[in-house]
Image (cartoon, rainbow, N blue to C red):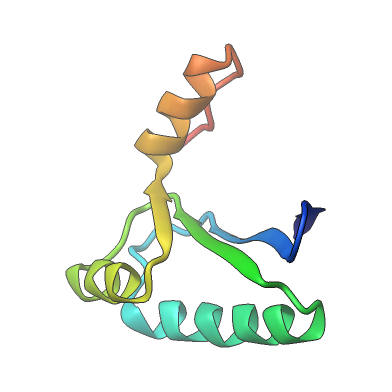
Length: 93
């Protein structure tokens, strides 16, 4: 987790990466949210951005849950598109 203090309040990205061979389900999203909440409270983060990466993607239920909670999420194709923009080697499948 990195943070930037700017004006009033603390901004931070809380990120989890799953390089698994199966899609991430809603249960993993719930666990990530719980861990993120601990970090938010422990570090007194005023403006958290929560992002989860999964190599194999997400179930429909997980996507709905992340959207409901306002989380960002990406699969390997989306991350590789981003890396390509910066000329960085793609992640291997």
